[in-house]
Figure 1 (cartoon, rainbow, N blue to C red):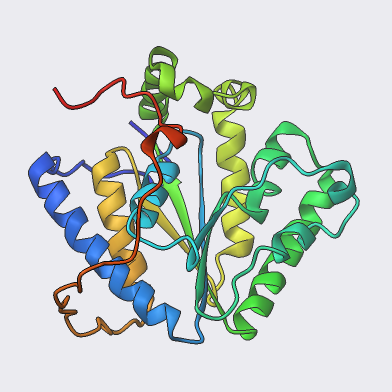
Figure 2 (cartoon, rainbow, N blue to C red):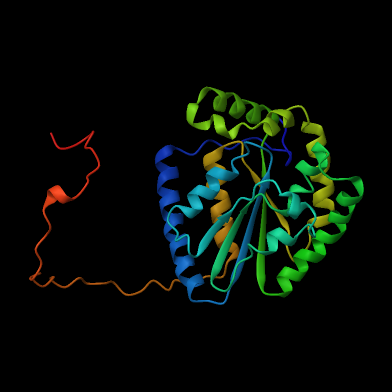
Length: 272
């Protein structure tokens, strides 16, 4: 079994109970990080890249579950419009960068040009080479402006990717995840590997290095990635003091309108 990271012998799988306990602990830490971030001047961008079905979406979902969308935003841009195709390549991403006290998660990013656009022929060789030259300078500029850039590459083996594709075909709620582009990418494993290697060679910079997440076991990938991400952010525990709810005073002076004046959702499932 081979993947982009050259997987070593797999470790024993984490039990469901241990996974849930560790995830719950990490999500509490994520809330602490959010509270610190809300009151800080920090700006954070977290980039998630990797092959189709590598587990990026599941990890992003576990990160954002306990967080406020006002502080932690997920950006997953569609294919560029005709107007956007005529812009400076990075332009449409700049509009989604964070302000102070905000974290933006990019579910795929400007690295589309280093991966899918390169492999599928959506950009020219000249455009691809210009991206490889420009991207490091663009990210250094972001870092100099005060934005912390954290980049993750989810590495999945070809065997595990195929297993996940087959599972999506059989699961009605997951079939939408298999786009024509995904199906075409199945035949271009080597081309994607070469594109990823070139991308890493040019963009694995000191100011914004790539971190590879082995993702053949989804539970391990989620726990490892969230743990690492929290380690990259110098947050402090600013949990406010415990709130004590006083007894609510009696509510007077209100008469509810007749129930027949309101339209209720039919109770398909109600009290027995």
